[in-house]
Image 1 (tube, rainbow, N blue to C red):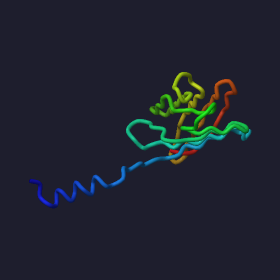
Image 2: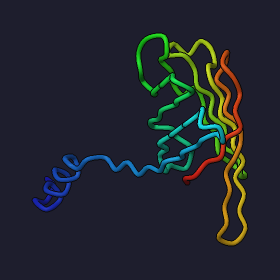
Image 3: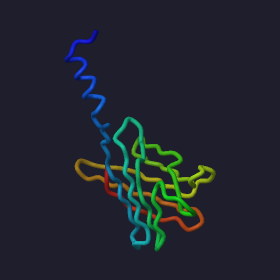
Image 4: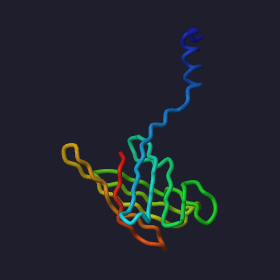
Length: 130
């Protein structure tokens, strides 16, 4: 039989909420036509846990339903590159692509790249965030 202390530890650990450490990447284009915000989990691999995209008057969020619904199809971050492909909610077609390059020197860091909304346009973006 487990000692009483071990049972208490197991009980309290089962009740504790899961830790979700996240960071946010925010990107815009110079003409203020595109605003993109992604919440990413701080895991050994890149995990996009939430986000929204605004292009002109169109606003899309991860998990929306209907014609503008989208999901994260795949995400990858390594060697100063970050790449995310967004798909329709059925994961049948890529609907948007984000490609970023990250570079830094001493305390100066820059993240920039392209965002493509399939069927609408491609945009040069600059970003801040982890």
